[in-house]
Every structure is written in structure tokens, then in C-alpha cells.
Length: 130
Image 1 (cartoon, rainbow, N blue to C red):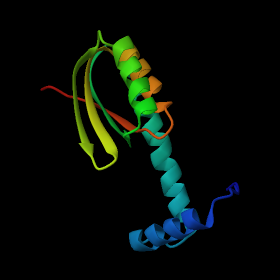
Image 2 (cartoon, rainbow, N blue to C red; image 1 turned 90 degrees about the horizontal axis):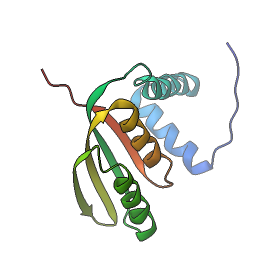
Image 3 (cartoon, rainbow, N blue to C red; image 1 turned 90 degrees about the vertical axis):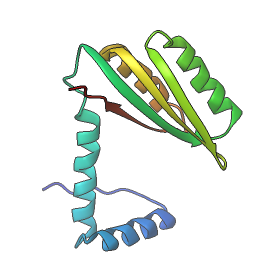
């Protein structure tokens, strides 16, 4: 196995150790390997998707005008595939769910545009209709 090293703040290490212990991982290496696998799976899960899709994009971000304006511009750019946006403000956070319907490539372009915004936590999920 290869050895990697990284630098993190004391606070991040303390939080990691707390969660690692509570989650039952025997070592930092074991917990980090699990995290790396989940990271890869998260980014690879849409590698082979194409065609017409229905997807939701979930966002959480600080209620700050520059971020709101940037997301609004992106939503306007992709208005042809956005069918609905639901949002809530809870304390100083804004939570949004975007329903996107169309070609996966365009939906992924929308998602990638949002993911690049600093301080925005974002996930995408396919809606399966049986």
C-alpha cells in the first residue's frame, strides 16, 4: 500500500478523531480509506449516465447576497430544464431543492456550475419512476 500525508488544522483533526472513534474505526488509516472510497463513489456514480433524466439538486448555503445572486444567475441560465425550485431560510442558511428534467449532460452542467460556488454544499439525486 502507498502512504500519503496531509496537513489539517488541530480542530479538524479533533473532530475527525471524535467521529472516527464514535464510528468504530480502529485507526485513522481505516477511517480515511473508507472516506476515500465514499468520495470516489460519490463522484463516479454518474459517470455512465446519459439520456433524458429527472433529478433533484439539493443545496445548503449561507444566506448571503453574493451567493444568492450567483445561484440565481445559474438558475436563469438553465431555466429550460428547471421545472421547480423550493427553498427555505433556516437561521442564517438557505436550503434549496431544484427539480431538473432533461438531458443528463445539461443537468450535470447545472450541477457542476453550482458545485463550484464557494460555501455551497450540494448533492444531486436521480428520481426513478417505476
